[in-house]
Amino acid sequence: MRILRGGGYRSVAAAPKLLGDRAPSRVNGLGLSPASGRLGTVSTAPTRPSLASFWHDLPRAGKFLLSTVIVDFIGNGLVMPFLVVYLHEVRQFELQHVGFLLAIPAIVGMFVVGPAGVVIDRIGARAVVVTAISLQIVANVLMAFSTTELRAALACVLLGFSGGVIWPAVNTLVATIIPSRIRQRYFGLNFTLLNLGIGIGGALGGLFVDVHRPETFVAIFLVDAATYLAPLAILLGPLRKVSGRVAAPPVVDEGTAAAAVTYRTLLREPGLLAILLLTFVASFVGYGQLNTGLPAYGRAEGQISTQALGWAFTANTLVIVILQLFVLQRIEGRRRTRMVAVMSGIWALAFAALGLSGLVPGSLLAALLFGACAAIFGLGETLYQPTVPAMINDLAPDHLRGRYNALMSIAWQSASVLGPVVAGVLIGRSWGTAYIVMLVGGCGFVAWLAISTERRLSPLVNGQRGRQPVAGEPKEQFSV
Image (cartoon, rainbow, N blue to C red; front, side, top):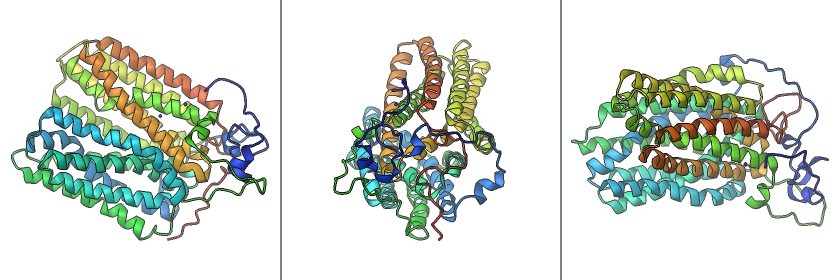
């Protein structure tokens, strides 16, 4: 989830035929809007918004969209920690088969996300999100009654299809509704509520489920399915007129057919390619390790108890929920790439704490160091989650936003698949020191990529707000 060197953007005569009247006089290889080039000077003095403004400044449609996040992710938190336990210990599937089953969603998602980006741009994000949510409901009901591996496999296919399309579709819908100037805030608020919901769901699930009572697992999957009814009701009710589709602008040269916009065409855009490479490396080093490599290292090298692992991830969630809004205040108007560079330094500190836990295996200090790693990592997340999605959506032309978000999703998912594989090889061969060096060195590479990416983005895309709006910024036209 990017090449980085070189000077400004080249002028391409045919570019206006691709994106129409959005093309500036100096354009990059796609002829994108001024938001994606180096244009003029904007005010860089950051202003610190009040916490209350995070909610009050949202358009009404945005408030509706955000209002169901915590309910939705309580359901996710209920089932996410217990899926392996359910399939292996309750349904008695072989552990190896469970591993294959849980790989299905990632594989299916990788196959569908590319076509999904095109569909989002053609029919609108809302219709795609509604379809994805409906599939999630069916998949969870099917999983609740998966007494056979074939039924569980079908549920995993549906989860993969839904998961592959919903992330770019939701981000595109958000960008359609939320004006560019407060988009970063929205992504930060969403991340806060998401983690709060997962934390509440995980705690409730841990208190409720019992492997000796299969009906408790059936219940949490059915509850998870029911939580999707809340966002579905919002999309089919108050937001039913928000399609999320933006028509392509007219071509500049009348009588000349516009060139087809393919993913290969989009990847010629230096700014997009830079953000994708940054996303891939950051996701590989960070999220590709969070739920796999870090716990594996903690158990193998630090000899951390399962209880300590649980408390560490609780600390991670608490840091995000408590600090995200305050971090949002302080990064408002600052360069997003610089925030990613700061994040990489914070993550390097977290991984150093992880490495130290391996020097005192089986001790209380090892558990505390692992907890510190998870908590510090969470602080870095509060810088990453609001900034990178905002960059990609401010860079994207309105009518291509689905494809831009699909490319970002591909970069993210690729790293999430590769990261655990590399971690498994290194930790499985007792190369713990090499694993820590890879993570800390990777953070340094992320910082370098972030600073290099900065040269490919306009100040507006990079979060510095002047008087000029980002081209195609929504005008809060959705009154519901």
